[in-house]
Image 1 (cartoon, rainbow, N blue to C red):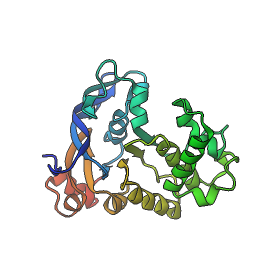
Image 2 (image 1 turned 30 degrees about the vertical axis):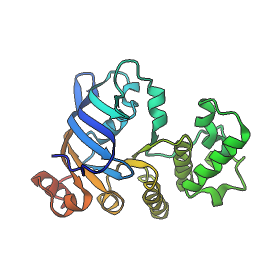
Image 3 (image 1 turned 60 degrees about the horizontal axis):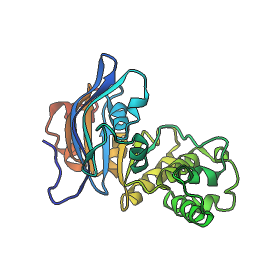
Image 4 (image 1 turned 60 degrees about the vertical axis):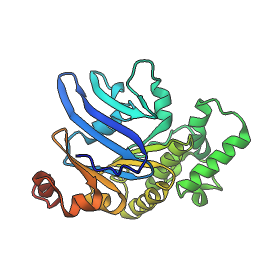
Length: 259
């Protein structure tokens, strides 16, 4: 049973989602409700379908040849997979940060953050300036880069580049932010900064994060879902799932017996 309080607003409802490639089914009949302004962590061993699942939430999965999706992902009372729904508009509402920092190499720090707004038709310099500053502040990066906004985004350290990518995603004001292993390529200090950032961001944005680090899930998330072999085995408040799991497989995973 999905553990979600009835008095909380849901921003995303996933109903009986199946996904995969060709004849290979990677995600099997997964349902999850995501509350507004919460952090939801997805944990489980490698190859269990977490990354495929999260890419289905903003229709990135369908960009892969032979990919398929069945089921519903409800955003603002609309199934994003209904015919006629614009995938580009979906991705403006559900941003994505990937495992490895990927600032646009030919762009400055400023232009990296402003790129999504410009694609959306924003041209007024004052609007762009305010959005860039706001987004970099939200990403805890403004003080470090405010005097070098014209320098390439790739000139920053790995941790700074990841926060730049977060700022870029935040610039278009998405209500939901997806993060696929956002700290796995970072050092411990940069990881701590990203975790601190996520805790602060959930005051304004809903976050769904894939992580192999169970300690990270325990530290930053409000809810945790455990995936195994493409299925959502258990989904509950993080504290409950880690201290009193209802499924034996969950207990075996979090106690290190496999995975």
